[in-house]
Length: 334
Image (cartoon, rainbow, N blue to C red; front, side):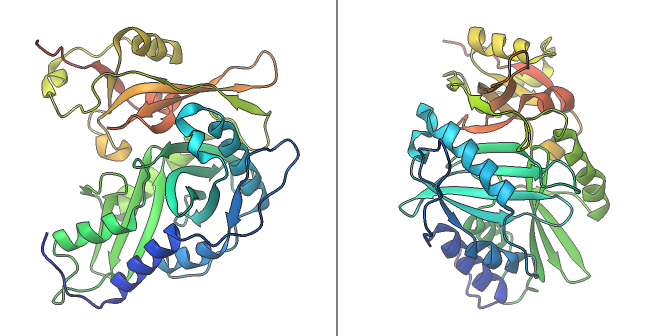
């Protein structure tokens, strides 16, 4: 990749934010009844993160912090997330109208993973777990954004510097919104760094769909939940390795149990949302799942699907069932 000599405000912001996100500014460990996991909280970086939005932000609400700590404690008891013990949490608000927060999990200056929490509604401080995962599945990588803009020749000594960079979130889709004054707005998938052929009206149609999360997931004000061990297959994880699945008949999958049964018997499967893949980050593989159980008897479990090239990004299976269809991976000839 070519070197870009640039002293624009954008690069200063990106580099400083990247350093701030990875640096450890430890505060006193959080104490809570029944919590054995040591979690440290950092509020200062949320103010620095506000530079991307060009305005100041408030500190993370206490209810969001409490919920984050509970989720991290539960996950750290499972093998896949065992490194999350004695971790530090940092809070970064996502863009206007999304009512969501990115929570990064790190220890000894090493990023371990993330949570994305979304307000159930705008009138209360009740939050739901929109998605979570381990590195390198974490979204909103500022260094990757910088590299992508440089490779696209969007930032260079002769180009116009962006006037704002906003992290956004819609169900299943972390986003970057990069604006250039009144001229152009660029939307990028904040996981894959793919440029999306969107305009402002497309985002405005997509943003209200965040409400879809509220009726399907457990929340910070609901019953206590416990997490199960991750069920993970060793099947294929890249739908682009063999595109013959596109011509195949979709699987008859309509419930959590259908997906679980398929993974248990046949390894991984492919999720796709025809004509709307850009809106949900598809297509991608589903190669595992994790269940969350309420401590109250008689309630249903909540299932998160393990997705992506590593299988360690977990998103609500109920949203996948609502937004797309599923295909089997093509058989690999021996």
